[in-house]
Amino acid sequence: MTAAWADCLPPVRGRLSRHAPLGGLTWFRVGGPAEVLFRPADAEDLSAFLSALPEAVPVTVIGVGSNLLVRDGGVPGVVIRLAGAFASVIVDGTTVTAGAAALDLTVAMTALESGIAGLEFLSGVPGTIGGALRMNAGAFGGEMKDVTTAATAIDRQGTLHTLGLGALGFGYRHCSVAPEWIFLSATLTGSPGDKEAIARRMAEFREAREASQPMRTRTGGSTFANPPGHKAWELIDKAGCRGLERGGAKVSDKHCNFLLNTGTATAADLEGLGEEVRRRVKETSGIDLVWEIRRIGIGKGELG
Image 1 (cartoon, helix red, strand yellow):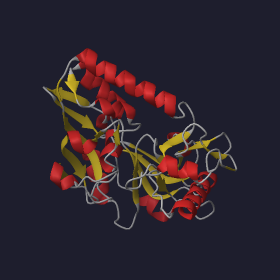
Image 2 (image 1 turned 30 degrees about the horizontal axis):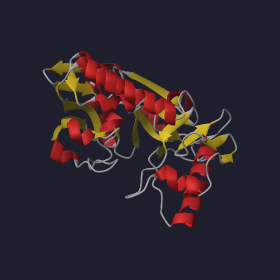
Image 3 (image 1 turned 90 degrees about the horizontal axis):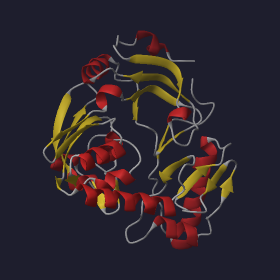
Image 4 (image 1 turned 135 degrees about the horizontal axis):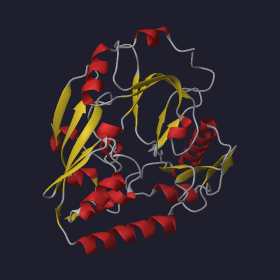
């Protein structure tokens, strides 16, 4: 049952849905519902909603679910998913201003069409700009910290903020902006480049991904962050976890830092398998793997 607070939600111009399924919004295709799912019409709609929402109501933001595991019991409170007005990509010289809901690939393709070099790595990052900011996403030697000059975000009270590079506090797969703040856009700066050379690099990145990673499968991308001085997949392989299964979940034979939903997995299967991988890696190497996949929600039977 949806909590009583959901009967007193502030009016919005976007879409509010109760007990909204989330599994289909993730690449894993698993997980329970959101108590309330909010798709704001624009930044003003989001600001007004947040400022009127009781502080005690949890708020969770999701993107396209490329690196997300929703637990089987669903997500308490309000889940916010940005789209539409938050997906714009605007070019000015060698600067690209992208909304948080813009796909990383779309931003890379726009930069290519505009002859902007330096953003090619985004073609190898699944997901959206908002998620890329939150985790300082990177691929093929490039990271968000290398190209981001500013970002806009909104806090839990609905106040907008403009943040410079220093305020973002980027580290490896991390930014230091308060987790309850919601990114709205990023300003990215590249350099003048030759379109054919940019296209070649992006093609090389695509070929490398297809050769080494399980594509067109129900996966959440890279599961664990690389520990300092190590590669997560090598530690997992040495621990004998390649091909390991639990229920409908499996460690990829092709790239063992990827978990797969073979078709019948639950979120509990996937998370349990990941924890078993962590246990075996700790046992064989003494290293604690850190989840790179974001896990949200609660176990089945706990929501209500």
